[in-house]
Length: 396
Image (cartoon, rainbow, N blue to C red):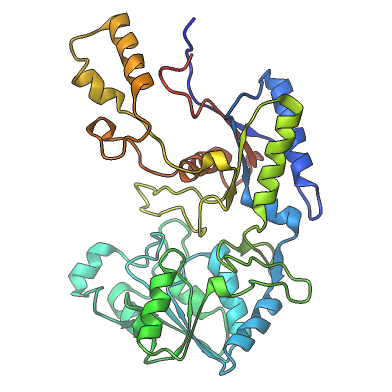
C-alpha cells in the first residue's frame, strides 16, 4: 500500500533541565519514552531538534549584570557610550542596556525607525508620511519623536513605550534616546560606540570605523570569555541572550557541536539508525500581520550534524502537472510524477523545474519548524522529532 503521509512532527516533552544535567542522556530518554508511548520507531534521517535554552541551561551559560558592566568599563574606559540599533525587547535587550548603564556614566541610544531590525514598530508608518519625515535622512531627538508621534507610543502587542522604557533604565538622565537609520548619526554625540544590532552588525561596525569612530565594539564582542566563572560565548558574545532573572542573563549556548554529534552517535549505537540532530533557536519567519521577523538570535541553528548542511534539491510538482504531464491523470499521472522525481538531477540550481521551491538552508527550514512546534511558552516540548522530512512523493 502506498504511503499516506509525508513529514510528521512531534513535540517531545522533557523534564525541567538544570545546570549540570547530562543533556544528551535527558534527550535520549525523552525520545525513548515518546517512541514507546506513541508507538514510533526512529528511522534513517529522522531529525531531532533541541531548543537552545535547554542547552544553555544545562551548561550554566549565564552572566550577571555586574559581570557585563565590568567588561563595559574595560572596553569603554571613557565612561560615555553610544549604543546603535538595539532591538526593542524587554527580554532581549532591556537587561543588557541596564548592565551597560551600570558600567557607564552616560549612554546615548540610537534606535532605527519606523521599526527595529526585527520589525518591532516605534511609530505608525502612515504618520511618518503625514509628518513629512524622511527616515533615510532625518535624525530625531526624543523631543522630536514626542512632538510628531505623541507622548505615549505603545507597542501594539506589548503595550510598552520602548523609547521611554529604555531612557528610564538609568536614573538622572544618564540615557538619551535618538532615532535615525544611519549609524553615523551617533558620532556627534559619542565616538565610542557599541553596535547592538544582530544581522546587520558587520556593516554597522564597518561604517562606523570608516567614519572615524574612536572605538567600535558589538554585542558579539562582549562576554566572549569566562570572567570569574561567568558563562560566555566565544562566537556570539551577548547576541542571542535573554533574561533569566532580574540580575542574570542566559547566553546563547556554546560547544553545541559536541552535543549533537554525541546524540547522533548514541542513537546509531542503540538503534542502528543514522539520525540528524540540531540545536535550534528563533525560527526565521515573519508574522504577516505584526510584520515582526522572529529571528532575534544571530542564527537559527548554532549547531547541527553534517547531514543538515545544504539546501533542498526539489522539483515543483505543480509545474510538471501543469506542463510536461498535463495530458495525464489518475495513476498514469502519479507514476509519471514519481519517475520525474526519481530522475531529477543532483543539482537543479537555476532550472525551470525548481521555480517556486524554497532555496533556504535545511538548518534554517528545520529550525523554524522546530520553533513553531515547541513555541516559546508553556508547551513543555523543548525537543522536537521530525520524521519523513527528507522523503518525497516517490518515497515508499
